[in-house]
Image 1 (cartoon, rainbow, N blue to C red):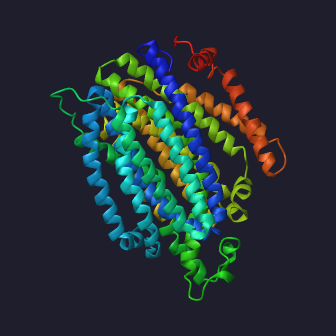
Image 2: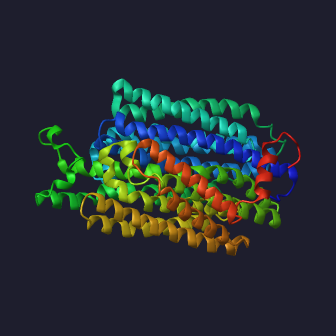
Length: 530
């Protein structure tokens, strides 16, 4: 971010980006270890499918609680830092009520919800355990929102690192102890409780006393709009898994009734099924497990740009609140440019792994989903940049625009996805078609968000950066394709070759310049100069 309102703020923002990026990097490491280990530790795609379905549903609800509340609280805190204690108190009262009600409803209505969403009420016990996470997240998000709004990025990063580390240890540990899916979800819930208690104590100490007579900024109206936006953006991101599970029942039953079982080879071990077991349920859970594992791999580029959204959010919130149009334009342009470069680079590294990547990471059964990996990577790249644009619109005081864009894209995706899956043959073809629909919806969302951003803030998308990043990715994958072999070591060699080629092309096309390198050196130095 090259020319911000002043040098001190510029350097603070860049250092904040490094803190949050480092924390998100550790989060990615822990998440990757979970995503790689749980399919193997749980034993088969069916159990991982059951875990993935419940975990994904909870992820949508958690995102509403975390991202929605965090952004709303951060905005009010960043606009009036002196009112941070009042904002904290107001947010805690509100979110304690919201979290408690949500937890109660999930516990009481677990069976009908699982029947409605998944077509499988047997998942209800898992949902009841996971509901604890959602209830706690409602409060935890308000506390992290205060920290983010105060610009305490290092502290926010510390909480991210602690949460990711403890979550990995407890989830894997309880699964290894023999508690299966219940242990994985229970470890998540225990982590949330511990870290939320620590955050409550820490924020109570760091927020300044409120000035006498100061009134807390309004929170509820803006919060409702942001939570609506976050809900739909996570439907767009996550609900495809629910549709794969639910809509696949019909083609699976049709295939089984016709005696077509060859596609089950490697997917479901029929010989181990208990008498009377529902083979269609097992098969659809397995397909969902394959899609979930592939989606997890494709989500890595999105996770990387979350740090950019975290850092730029309070900056744009403050610059628009102060009507500083020049600073706002600079924040927006550089945030989108940086996001584009980072997303394309990471997607290229993963794509360079080739068709055997899923086999080497998860096991032979997951190769069925290999054709879906590349379109899912492209879809997530488009979604990641769309997420940054939507976060910018929200920070600038236009949450209804972000809500409308996310809702439209989610409805478009789900409306097309269900009939496509229900009319597809079960197996790899079904997963590939699902991935292509997801890709189309996310590209449409990105294009629409670019138009809205240009109209609202007068900032055009850096199309030249998109073009240069695309050329760099194509060249990198072409060069990496010359590396022969399919072993795990060779997957990493291809990724390394692709990464070096991408960066070389980005330098050659002047997407990365000496000025960018100078900013990196300045940020890492101890000098007070920005």
